Length: 276
Image 1: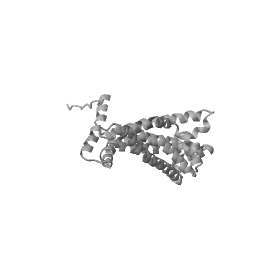
Image 2 (image 1 turned 120 degrees about the horizontal axis):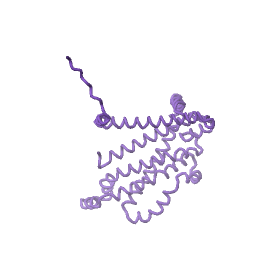
Image 3 (image 1 turned 45 degrees about the vertical axis):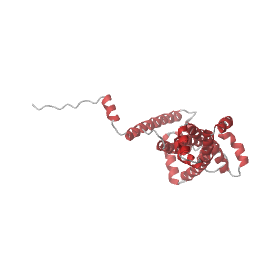
Image 4 (image 1 turned 90 degrees about the vertical axis):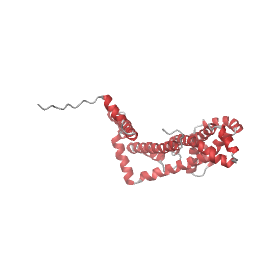
């Protein structure tokens, strides 16, 4: 008699072991897909609840279906790209000046104890003021709305960069400075060969925090008299009761914010001394 092969049943433990044996990138993709699937499911449930309630059915366009249809239409007619460009232009300029001001100031605060002692209280005081609280001042100080918004973004980005940079300088081993001096390093060489390589990871960590704060501040800042940008698009969609377009712009804001944060994370890992 011929024997019949019996296929062993896979247990949950076996599946777990097989999954852990997959490359890290594949595991990360699976986890990300699961997370986004859960988010979309909850969004879909929320859309059903809104549509089934007579008091909220007017906002049914917030559901995933109408949102992605509106997003596709925005992509096809080309208006989305101009909207994204306007917001990215402001973010990049605001972040640029935040870095130009924040990194040198952070090095001074971190390296020189008297500067740190003098600047600590006023910097902490200014840091706790919401960037949007500077809106009336920015309107008076700048002729164009664009420059006013960029100023608000600078006020949002400069503090995480200053404190991140200062923290990085304070973490440098003092023996490194002593060795550099013994080797005849001047101030410029000390900055280029010792300080900047040592604080790169902390600077990019501060920039990552700055991007997050600036991206949150951007939308309400673009309510400020401009006729372009993601914040203006949301405000315009709200005024015209175009809720599917409003939700589509929210999706775009989340996607671009995620990509900006992803770039910052890659830079942090690139300049990390402890790469796993």
